[in-house]
Length: 66
Image: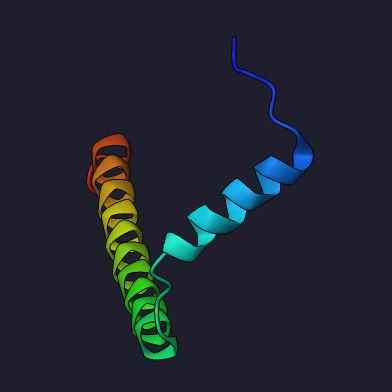
């Protein structure tokens, strides 16, 4: 079982740990955000094309090639 810590000590510990964090710069955050949007666009395009291809193949099989 975890030992009980009083709220004041807990807040001190949290502040100490937060001070150790290396926060990203504005530029790093912007670049990461842009990269995420680009990867989402690629993934969405790939999944759309794959879905259309699968639908076409299933339609061809089920419809007898019409």
